[in-house]
Length: 180
Image (cartoon, rainbow, N blue to C red):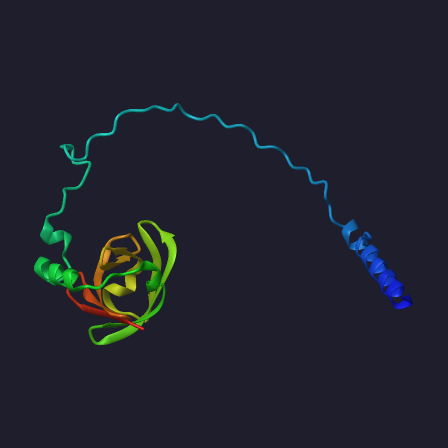
């Protein structure tokens, strides 16, 4: 019983010692002269109807791409349709992590995350050549994995062909393969 009282007394002494003010805190100036920010005038707010992008004749909106330019992956529309039909289902969460990339005669590493970046998720490459050096993001669109440059423009499209295998092409037609 006496040991319990001694241990309790030591615990109390340690607790009180932790609450003491030390001399190192005396040198900290907690009363700084913080001035509030001055209010700044703002301009007027106006509103108006935005133009309809489907009937725009002012050239403010770019032209809708044709099917051939929208799917410019080097395989052509028929090749993309066949790859899409044969492609396996893609789960975005399963894409996260490190991938080994084979593109033409070279190989490199690709890292995919779920961190949002513009219209996709953050990604990047290390040791890659060609178009893949500009990769900054990626997204899953149906059965397709779209690799994008740092401006959000597609640079490659891939389809799942096996459990840990994706195949496709860059915009210039260079074959690309991801594997783990």
